[in-house]
Length: 159
Ligand SMILES: Nc1ncnc2c1ncn2[C@@H]1O[C@H](COP(=O)(O)OP(=O)(O)OP(=O)(O)O)[C@@H](O)[C@H]1O
Image (tube, rainbow, N blue to C red; front, side):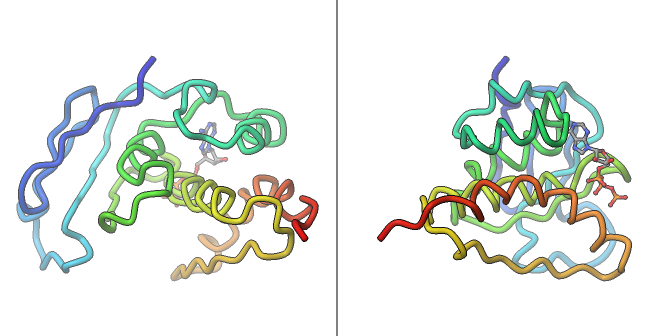
């Protein structure tokens, strides 16, 4: 199964091609800030099996399956993965809206950790990122990605 294909059109419009329903960034209430210029709104669709996720670090794939027990990326996770090229693209920022419990935490955290894995191979102790959240509950959710960072933290230093 391939990653869900999304087509980005014009100024903030994102069109669904494979089961991810989307909307126009300028169609709702409120202003669209510059960093929100691409809006993904996912409501349904099929997941992508972990082993089919292109560009996913093998250690992260293993931790997702063995430590977290996840067998696939949820649709919103697959969409963000594709739009961020697994965290390696700096082409644009993303503004993602998806239902409660749809997996937004991993959607942004997995590309982030994957990118750091690529950028800092074997350099233990240098894994650093900052996640800013508005509530304590949301902050607690981010702790779920802890196992994903363990291989990086314990990796031997390149000297
Ligand atoms: N790929 C996955 N496979 C299986 N379970 C997953 C996957 N991704 C996330 N989950 C689980 O789904 C639940 C919801 O995930 P998460 O809290 O990230 O959703 P959310 O969209 O951020 O929710 P909220 O809107 O409440 O912040 C969590 O229990 C999480 O462990």
